[in-house]
Image (tube, rainbow, N blue to C red):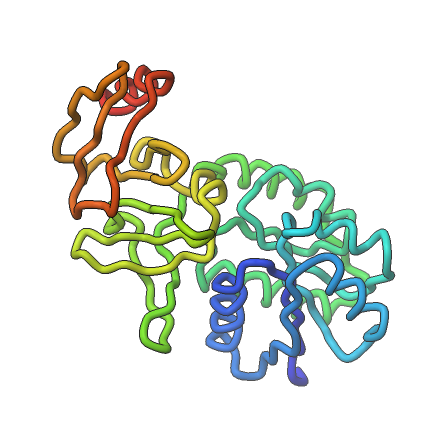
Amino acid sequence: MKQLKVVVIEDEPVSARNLAHVLQTIDDGIQVINILSGVKDAVEWFSEQQTGYDLIFMDIRLADGLSFDIFKQVKITKPVVFVTAYNDYAIQAFKNNGIDYILKPFDQHEVKQAIDKFKNLVNQPGQQPRETDLSELIEQLSVNSKAYKKSFLVHFRDKLIPVETAKIAWFYTANELVYAQTTDARQYVIDFTMEQLEKQLDPTVFFRANRQFLINRKEITEVDFYFNGRLSVKIKPAPPESIIISKARVPEFKTWMNN
């Protein structure tokens, strides 16, 4: 097969770079020719570039809308592999050139399966996913819907390194950045919002203590009573400021700690 030219549509820079790296690791004949960060960028690019690429890897929820909005504004005839943290768009995905649907956090095996499926379709022109394929996929997505993020790819000294989620003591947001503090006292900037992290982390392990902190229960050392019915959480390594649980959230926090 000739060189496979891929376009990636992803608004999270680390996820985009990770996907591009995985694709090129799978096959050095794969060339990621462009990474587009949103609906607007994609519409502009595809309006001018109708050919010159073979396959699209596309996130669904982008910063400026759903990727399905792209199909409403420009004609796309190439196959699409949807890569998303959400499992509730499968049917809509297959109505918009979808040939596969991968849930984040993805691994190399899943991406390779999608590439293999694309190659099979190229070798058998006109073949589309069967209704039974779609129903099986939706069932599988339902089973896998509680697969939580196991690691993060982070920048460190001009490199990308994996950090296991289990080794993160807490996430902290300040000055529009989100930091991950590991149990061995290393700190990294994470390319996710706190709201995105909440959806991707196991809620039995991580708790949104307040607007600034997501905390790992395994690293909590003690909980003190604070004035006005609030609680103060001590955790290691020590964070840059106190972690206070509001009076309204205390019952939820206690239930979480008792599970």
